[in-house]
Length: 334
View 1 (cartoon, rainbow, N blue to C red):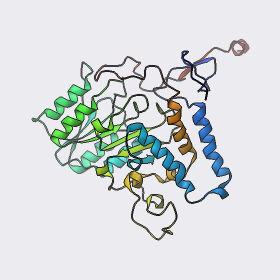
View 2 (view 1 turned 30 degrees about the vertical axis):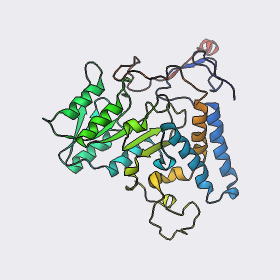
View 3 (view 1 turned 90 degrees about the horizontal axis):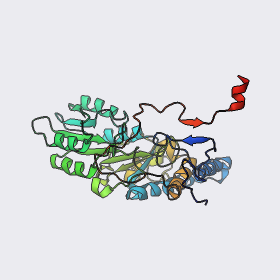
């Protein structure tokens, strides 16, 4: 495998033309050549479907599951493969019920994916949705801890948070928040879209009830693929989809479609059908983690919790997201 270079915006691992300087990886990362080739390898399987067995629907799925688990220090059985962060959050919402009279806590100006479903869930279950206002010092952790400790207001029953704020990159100390949440019996759901792959994540310290992370940002993968971690205490819940591919015996067709109702072990019950049956993105997922060791991005380091990262506060990625050198010949024809 070619070794990466440290020149600004350039690497032999990426198919970036010489006249392009791409700066928007925090929104949408380019796919490395290795991951692109892995996707093509997965598609090639469908060219010769006569080589498929029932187990063929699961071999690459299980390899991808193991890679995702290793990335966060989990066990493969703790991981379900889903289509997006919002799908994972919706799965968590189906299985976590904040007590009536409690508060579901999210952050002001946060991305909608870890927020919208909780607004509806709170209203349906007699709870309330509350957003922590942006603190003047950008220290979200202290603001959250203060709200958890406030006994003059309704108790917090669930927190839906991110390791760093989507809008400006301010970091949260999730381990400290987890400890404070335990003290009041609150559940914790994490959307790791903005950080998994570029920052270390301590599963043992944070202990989320659910954690979801898609691949299209720092995991250098495609859209339409995400991993959902479910704490072992949450692995007997109800999935969003009811299909055969998550049932015991489906990988060997030993259930013969005889209406088997028992799910496979662990988080596999939450597997999304579309992603259980397509291998090309599994190849990509396996390749992503192997590539990351050689795709070290400048600035991929920890920062003290609460410290604000300086970057433009784009509500939407600018269009275009890259800058191409002017085509002088084309300009002359105008």
